[in-house]
Image (cartoon, rainbow, N blue to C red):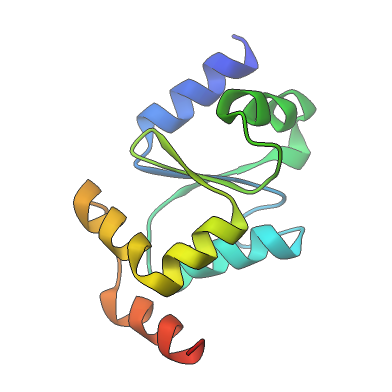
Length: 119
């Protein structure tokens, strides 16, 4: 199975997927840590994929999304963005709306606490 096929299968079979450096419990870079931290704090169930464990996936996900950096967040099979975009969406409430629209369960109070702490 090609890297593209593995990535497609992963994003289509999980509601939320984060391609990151490290894991959700042990991120290996600040950007991955920030996005995983947001998802963890908001109580989002997601599949983490450690790109450091497989160079073909690390490059493959960049090609798949046509996005040059890691982390990369997918929701219901759709590429959402990297660290800066997820941070902006969290602070504006757009991420809440996306999760609501896509039927992804998350803690709305936790999302509000993130915005309050960054106001």
